[in-house]
Amino acid sequence: MRRHVAKLPWILGALVVLYAAALRTEALIVRYGGDALPRWARGLEAPLRALHPGRLRFKPMERRYVGDPGAYLRHAREMEGFYDARFREPFFVFAAKLGVRLCGGRDLGISLASSVFSTLAVAATFALGAAAFSPWVGLIASLGLAVDQQALALAPEGWRDDAFAFLCVAAAWSTLRLYDRGRFADALGLGLLAGLSCLTRITSLSFVLPLLVALAFLPRGREPRLRLERVGVAALVCAALVAPFLLSCWIAYDDPLVSINGVAPAYQAASGMEMERSLGAVEYLASRFRFWDLVDTLLVGATSYPFVTKWNYGYLSPLLPGLSAGVAAAGTLLLFLDPRGRLLLLTLAAALVPFTLTWNVRGGDAWRLTLFAYPFYLVAGAFVCWSLARTAASSEARTGLRAALAERGTWLRLGALGAFVAFACVAAYGVPYLRLAESLRHGEAARVVAGSRDALFFDRGWQAAACAKNVCARYSKGREGRLRLPLAAGRNYTVRLRAYPLAFAGMQPQRLTLLGNGTALGEVTLASSELAGVYECEWPAGTVRKGTNLLELRGAYATSVGAARARDPLARPEWRTAFAVLHLDVVPEGAKATSIGPEAPRRREPARPAPSGRRRGSSRRTAPS
Image (cartoon, rainbow, N blue to C red; front, side, top):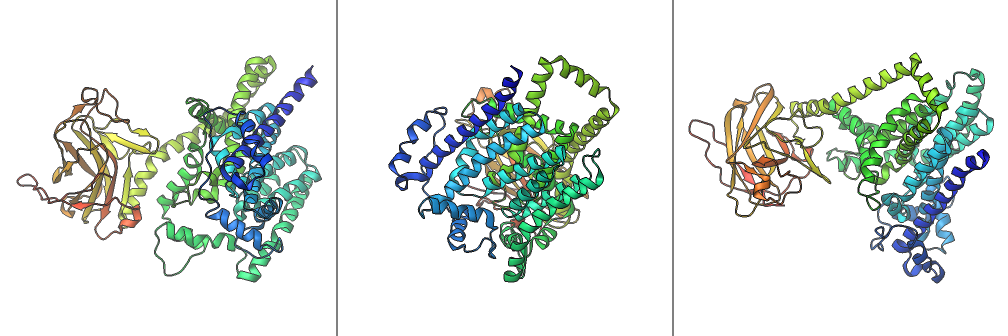
């Protein structure tokens, strides 16, 4: 009976992979098939549709293979030799070439290639969870990836991200196999998967090299000579696969890393950087970031950016996305307590490094770019579920837990984990303030955005940040709200406020007075609209002091949200408020507005006089946008 039970998760895992293949086949047929498919293939659509909930539906794609998929198709058709010098790494291009050939020369072949890799990523997720903890962990994690709505939609689009996700997860699985068994075959497998990862994205070196270094020292119970021999084998296999491509690019382009450096000009343009020449990747990163800007970019890029956009299970249940994210967040932290979990965390963190530096560039925050991180989060969440179930059902597991808690090393790791969480929380709130101060100190425009990390800016007189989808706002408590801004003395500033009043039928225009350190800067009238406008006033140097400056916003009146029956999805009925702020731009005199991104169009309004004896300010407002 125990043998049969032990086989059960493996059987169910195989069924999950088949289910994932069926869902991705339907997405391919509906979104990209059309008349290009034979009649028998189109006939599969109806039975496949019956395999998933009715709320999940796919629509045919109108614009097909634009951007990178189109480039992969062009390279695939031009490909003569695998290691020919080209701008794109060769492995996915070669897979696309095979797909096009299998589809009789039709573009649909690249959709077939990416869909196959998406299915293989589900299988690799099962293998990773099974190797790290238990087949039941792999089963839960693979099911999560199999039914994610965004992963299903992405699968047939022809991007290389599904292939990279498969290879990255498979390399992590191979790392665990080498860690556990130390066999020569495991070293060969790791070298092969690491090499193919680099031939899909050359930035894979960011996690391949740290893994090889870690395996040279782990596990500590294995003979050092054996560890070094196995790591040497893996490194040689990886180098043998990657070196010919690098050498080919070196000869043709005089740059072995043209796959990385060739993308840098696009990121340079998307960042709004004006340079006389195109920069390489290292030059671009060195010229773009200052210290606190770099720290904040890395902090968000390594934590919330790759995590919060996952969990697309809303079509199954509205509670499932939040519940899945919470369990996975706890599991990701708890991986630190397990030696195999620490290897997974090393792989995840190292693989994210190239994307933590570019996520806030236009186009750099695409969901697909961090698809490879999703299986690690799913394994972490499944690890929590499995651990809780095992502890509740097994006295042996409870005994093992008590023994682990009695060890000093467990408490040291728990202490280190707690210190890390505390540091991350402090940094999450403190770094944005330091980053804004740094930008203003160098004469650059900066933006304060309402949201989860705005506590040091929104001082007093504000309700808690209210968010819905991609919009966050801060509502005033009553008529007044105050902000803290770290300005540099001796400079004139322009303050641009994106705000709106509490909107309801028949309301009187809301007049908003702005005061800087107690001195009136001007008065603006908020548009009677549910949409936000941009309002502007000048902050003269004479009223600016070094360090923290206080910007006070005073409305003419406040209204109860419930009593007004305002149709505002962010405001709560019990709140009494006058206005809401989405973000605030602070622009030093002479700064370029492009440093804080595109602005809404504005039209001029005559300046209203400040109260008698105070300075005169100016205001401008946009039409509702």
